[in-house]
Length: 38
Image (cartoon, rainbow, N blue to C red; front, side, top):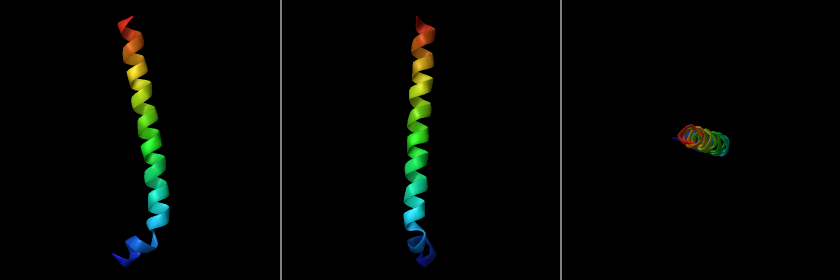
């Protein structure tokens, strides 16, 4: 628990980057699905 608190800042940064990557990937996949429907 203490180690988790010590690495919270880096963990938040990694989580933020992961969320951005995941959102970009979802947007990219939805764009491919939208383009394939046309």
